[in-house]
Amino acid sequence: MWLRVLGSAAGGGFPQWNCSCPACRAVREGSRPCRPRTQSAVAVSADRRRWFLLNASPDIRAQIESFPALHPHDDRATPLQAVLLTDAELDHTLGLLLLREGRALELHATPAVHETLCEGTALLRTLERYCPVEWRPVVPGADVSLGGGLSYRAFDVPTTKRTRFGPGTEQGRVVGYRLTDEHSGRSAVYLPGVQELTTAVREQLNDCVCLLVDGTCWHDDELIRLGLAGKTAREMGHLPIDGPDGSLDQLSSLPIKRTIYIHINNTNPILLEDAPERRLVEKHGMEVAMDGLEVQV
Ligand SMILES: [Zn+2]
Ligand SMILES: [Zn+2]
Image 1 (tube, rainbow, N blue to C red):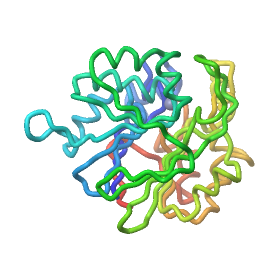
Image 2: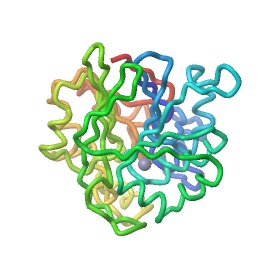
Image 3: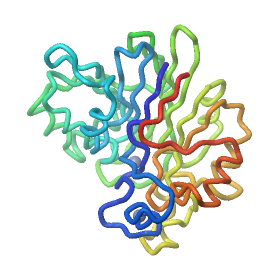
Image 4: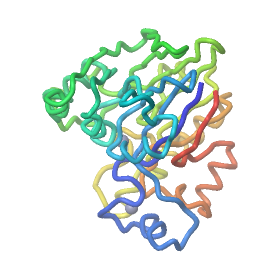
């Protein structure tokens, strides 16, 4: 199974258009070692012929062009088979509208996410005027074969983040995906948004070879410190990396071969390759995703 990081930044990308935090300034000025990043999305395949997209970022057009395996072959036949959504956030779903030229779109999403996309953001109702959408309801805990030797199992990720849209159904608002290569039996987990590593969430990480995990913020109060927002990382549904209850301490003890931070906010100092925070992540044997990173599982 192959996982290709198409985009590694959180919503807004790196740099973000309206931001002049230290990291955004550094990447614009070229004053520190760091690379620009597009908004998070991953392509996965077990045969390198049929590819599945984990979330559809607003940068999807450039991301597809950046990866030849996703380019169309005969006429308009695309290797892109379906999109799997972890939630209904705009930075994970706006790219769906940019796929409107397709003949049809197969979309895997929980009923809660589907409802938000129809009734909340109305994104699906707009898309369906252009292109038929085949919705496959995602049921946490159920194994689903995607064909091509790839299967997935979604799992519920509890969050207290308030919904901007819809009734705010608790179940299925956010899920993670455990992807399995049916031939080798090896699994990888995609978890770009996780507020708490609960026992149930940790169970899904058992025996996985590769974990792509929420690296949104270093500090819980990162955006407050920088004067950019009034909310903590946890209040936005993201477990910070730093601190005694942070993800670095909790994850570095797990026997996972590769743990890679993804969905990194532009304020996070791990984006700066000479930052002490970046070195600390690497010292713990963990990695920081960049656009174009490919992992073979
Ligand atoms: Zn996001
Ligand atoms: Zn910034």
